[in-house]
Length: 253
Image 1: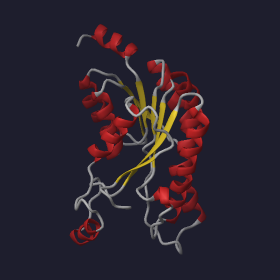
Image 2 (image 1 turned 90 degrees about the horizontal axis):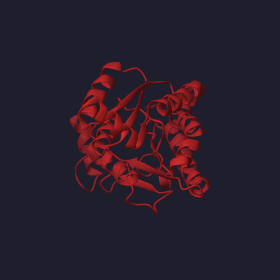
Image 3 (image 1 turned 135 degrees about the vertical axis):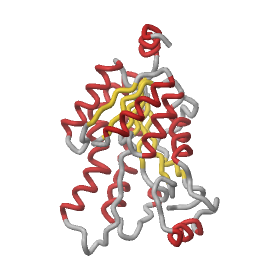
């Protein structure tokens, strides 16, 4: 595809902003949406090599990818993230907030600083981006996708993940409230809730314990998570909003 053709295609294409794009799930979503013709704003924090490799691979689909190395726990970083996406592409149609690391830590060891960090990463950073993106998503009648975990919609807790579970439970209410408030503006808001996904290594013993709790008898893949995101945002389920969609093979994480 020649440069002029790419520029014309860029102006016609919808735009997706994906956070934590250098992590496995975020990467799979970028590749899936780029294959569907979306230009991509790809946020990452510090893994420059992985981000550049992702950009190169995604742009083979004939789209453009803007790399955005910002800390979203910083509200100013979230503001710049959205501003640069709009400057690059002129619009924003899809916001996919995949950011959400977990840290196993016994409650007897959790400090106020640990707690604050988990809430900032998993909840406050999501709000920071939505705060600056909402006017553009209203304009495009777009879609926000947040990320929980399988069982969070039932307030299912996990041992040694106190702060993480609290943040994700807050994200459930944020997602449902946004769906109610932004629905009148034509914006849909849903959450994807993965269970055990094969993006993290486990010992053989731990793997067997995990598989016993999964009716499918296997872990999910990052591509299967990305397929659900693509299904949500690509226009088909136009009446689905405020939903918590588990991608967990029948388990509750």
